[in-house]
Image 1: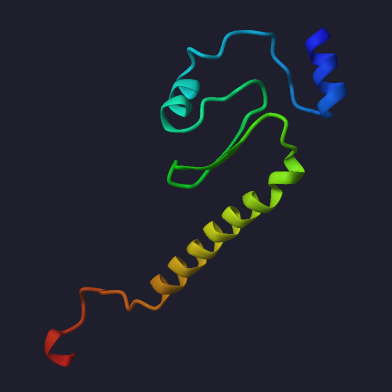
Image 2: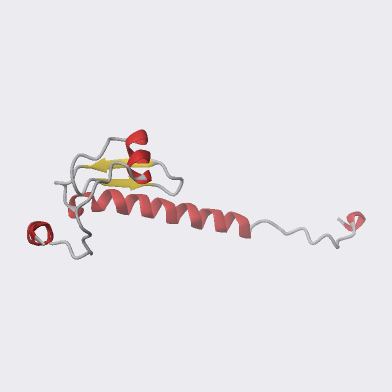
Length: 104
């Protein structure tokens, strides 16, 4: 309970806190350690794009407010990519397979 009180008081977190345990054997920890900076302490943050690439990372002392612009930029770029893809797909004339080739 001391850990929960400490983090809720100092970091104003609202999510559920599980009991203290070792995380270095978890698949996520191993993947992150192999692909980026190994987390140093609690609340290390990673920004991962839609393809699973780590774009940026921040230590646990960096506030969410500080990284907001980076996250927003990535989200906006993904939305823009999705809109561009949809628009380009809408401009393609579908092949119905029923057209007489000689009429074209």
